[in-house]
Length: 137
Ligand SMILES: [Zn+2]
Ligand SMILES: [Zn+2]
Ligand SMILES: [Zn+2]
Image (tube, helix red, strand yellow):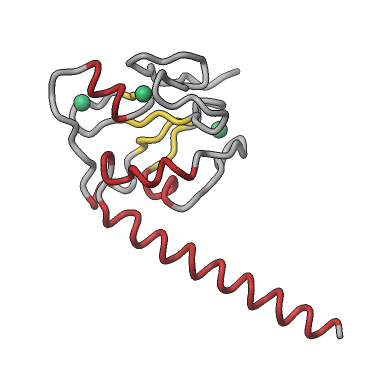
């Protein structure tokens, strides 16, 4: 049974929430906006559809479920989305370019901490690989 998915508003072009602005294979997320609480595929869809300015989620809202995976219908929290490159539920890759627009949707403080954590994790992986290959020799 499929979980009930939130409705996505705006000029959505397919069932995986691609829109007229962003429609590469990786563009499969929709974002719930702070201002109206509705899901839109992107900030341009929101701007085209409503007549109010978009509001961004404040830093304390990291546990809000605000990012919809258009492939499986899972809704990620802001914190979860900040830390992943793929859907935690169906493993679909998300467009890394979306995070360049991060501050259109979320507080900058969410991403800064997460990016630091991701960089640290990558460092540790490299170190582990290095010590593993030293051991092999
Ligand atoms: Zn809105
Ligand atoms: Zn759009
Ligand atoms: Zn998914």
